[in-house]
Image (cartoon, rainbow, N blue to C red; front, side, top):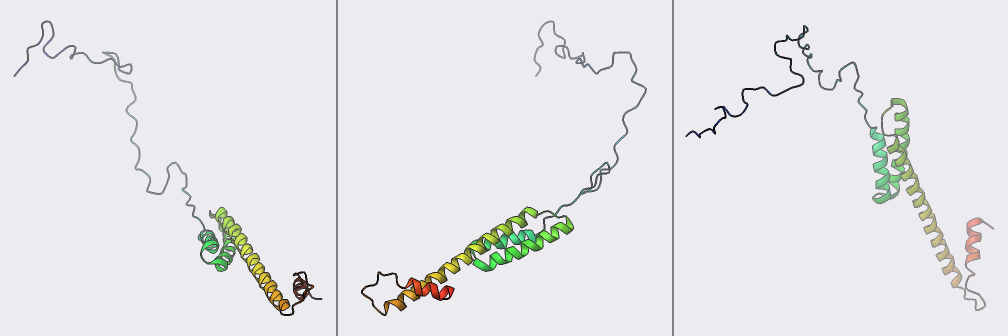
Length: 167
């Protein structure tokens, strides 16, 4: 079924014979410029290579640096003193390898060293405090066996301190 066209309009619709205006179009009757189209591009460079002479540098993170941080964090929460010591050892090895090879991961190695040293120090202080507490308890029980009614209750401290530091 065909629709009737309104009066005064060409059968193809309004202005379909005219070309739309383009500021880049050549004026009618003129010739194209003397040069041809641009040459086609060459084949793309193989995967992993950049064009125009640039080298793609593959940077890897040092695996000892990663192991240092992981062991130090495990030493903080899972395996108390062993993980911290391993984190310290791996951190020093990683720092040396990074200095020689130029790999990434210096920050990870430093973080592993810091966390390892902090938690190893805290565990050593905790162990020393626990041993000191046990010595005070032993000194208190040893001094309480000879009851002295004139004692002020702190007579066990002096024998313990002289035992620890000599005297």
